[in-house]
Image (tube, rainbow over the protein chains, first blue to last red):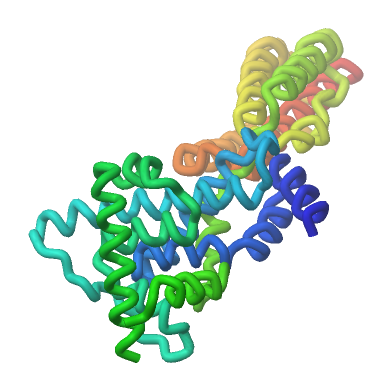
Length: 170
Length: 165
């Protein structure tokens, strides 16, 4: 599969949209997962997924293969979702209130932890997803989200506390 | 309350992928701007077109225009196509001024030559208008080039036939 991905990447770099479709098809689930978990809103996650792939298409000629395509796309996806998350943050400041269950998706087939993550307050959720699921460090998260490193650690702790208590309810 | 270990175990079981519930590709694909060719190819294309148009055409007006569509179609760069089209237009203006004004006798079969050119001119105007709204539409640019080349061919045949009669 890795070799096939490299072939598609090389073809897409030259402008082959069919090859890029294959890459989209291969990685859309991974990209959407990052976006959905960060944004906790299906519509916004779809927008962010599309935007991430558009950015990937635009930046692909500069992709030198220092990391795998998957890692590279993963980084673009995280940053794209965070950009949208930061826009939402401005909106949250405007209303001066953090609705804890905004965009909560009640999907019975979704694992309990998945649903609980989507219920987390926005900042705690973003920190939790980036640290626990995406492998970012707290200093990186602080820079990405525009918060202090200490806040990142505190929010992560808060997220874990909430998740532990919510999961125990069920 | 779940323990830290139980939570970690649940996290490790989370699926790495979540499939979107609708097909995002149709909207996404509309936003993918076609890739431009490397710059050196543009210059090669322009140079080739310039050589063909300026070296061969003015000295042999009766010969068909040498710029082939393959040259234009081999690149998907709209700017190159537009540059070639501008050169063709300059050439067309020059030929109309230089040759048609000196035309002494209109050969048989070309009596409506001015009307014929007017039709092409109108068609060209429509395409140029469309290009103002869609400047990167390569089909439009290629269509413009075809019309310009048809006019050049027509003038060349007209002049050649006139010289023979």
